[in-house]
Image (cartoon, rainbow, N blue to C red; front, side, top):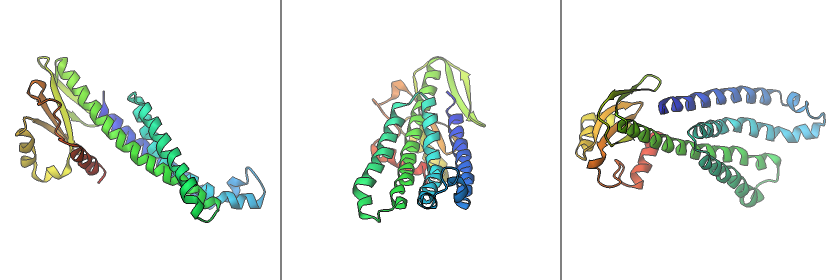
Length: 239
């Protein structure tokens, strides 16, 4: 249930993976003949393989975000979503490139291999967006379940340590809002949600925590009233 540590593991994994691939890619860029020469001594093959070597290795830096976020999602028991995203974003983009884009470009291996970093970049962007939506939903669910068990959420600190206090078991809905702009006028921001019955708890790394008794909820009420407001939240996350 420690979702803040999952998020920190995500960014740490991406940083380490990208750094490692940057070092490896630099070595392959500077000494392509040596590495390709491990497989063949044919100069023509080495010359043709060089563009693919560059595209694949530097492109893997983008794929790091996709791979790490996929692993984090699987750790939260979400495997179908990442699989479908990879099939659509990776395989789909490459098929589109080969069938509808590449025929109009110079017929070289370099242009063909451009599909790799493009597909990895698109897949990484979609996977990260999906990860944050899942993490937010699961964290809200976790806090609600704890309150039902008689543990009221107080705050989250440090590397993601949750603090609770014992209370009467009650069905309380928790929701998070990522809104750094709200920090510029915190009082007005909190009052806006208070007018709708949401109690402000704290802010942690840009996320504002709110709660509201389930009995006071207006159906499937959310602090984001429509799809455009949910999209606005995701846009604020990636600014």
